[in-house]
Length: 151
Image 1 (tube, rainbow, N blue to C red):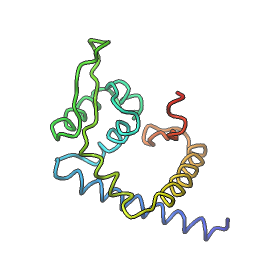
Image 2: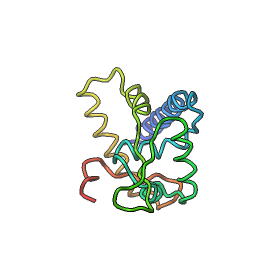
Image 3: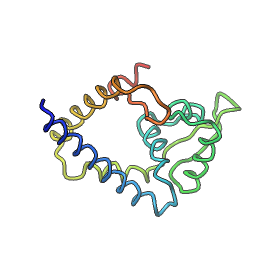
Image 4: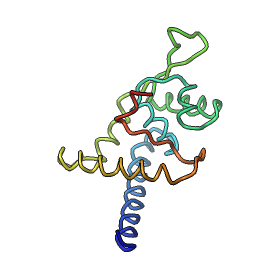
């Protein structure tokens, strides 16, 4: 790949990121939720109900930040909290269906074949970038769905 191709790809990725963030802002604004909460919503969407400790570990945020964020998401009606049935000290956080609208709008208009191919290409790109970027608390972790269940 030459520089021009790489530069064009980087610009397309940037544009997608900007447009996706705008879509998230618009979808979350009626709930009074900050786009920064998106990471927690995506984690719950991908992994299902999680404890607040698991959300903290997955996101890299401190426990007090997670507690505040989960309270805000609950007040907005996007998640529900309940006590853990196995650990009296833990709280389970579960995603409600409102967040799914953003996911549906993101892929609206793509055929299932196009979506499958695009997902494969972007997953490969994300995995490739994950190996070249040093770990940081500011960069969300990337674990392909295909191996999430094996952790």
